[in-house]
Amino acid sequence: MQPHRAPPDVKREIIEWFGPIVLEYYGGSETSACVSCTTAEWLEHPGAVGRPIGGADVRILDPIDHHEMPVGETGDIYIKPLPSWPDFTYLGNDAKRREMEVDGYLNVGDIGYVDADGFLYLSDRRNDMVISGGVNIYPAEIESCIIGIDGVSDVAVFGIPDPEFGESLAAHVEVAPATTLTDDDIRSYVAARLAGYKVPKVVVFDDHLPRHDSGKLFKRKLRELYWRDRSDA
Image (cartoon, rainbow, N blue to C red; front, top):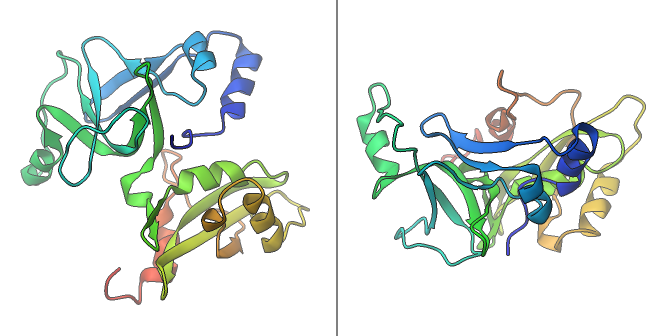
């Protein structure tokens, strides 16, 4: 089974702070919220974002031939919106709208899996996945690990060119003032908790990591530093 979307300890601390009133939703701007998870459900399924609600549905499909993946196996997340949700298209790009649909289910770019009880877990964004030596690596798992280091306030992990493996991992890390972490500290911490191939080859300390107005990491700006001179970028 693949790792959970985010460190369960973070969500658990939120629940301990606010009490058993935390309700989580998952969906996309194209689908609205179609999955929900109560506090009680999350405590029984740490890391999950929930199960489909109100007539919505979720399928995990293979990215190549779109066959449905077995329970616990990672694939592309396809969402069937609520019956009341209106259809849509992308302005000037109706082809993109049609490409994202399979049998009425819509893919908004996320990767994940479902457990035996039908709870959905997010692994990463499809565009963020790194393929190194033929192995699929999900940066979100490594980011969740590194953010647990005392003094780390933000982190972005992504793929960079590698002449032997195609891609390797880079971690850009933002630390709190007066923190004295080194790149070896970061690698050692990850190596003690994750598989060796998930240890970043490159570690860079940045004053601030770029983020969208929505709060999402703007990884493209960081990737461009490594890929901009590559014809296959």
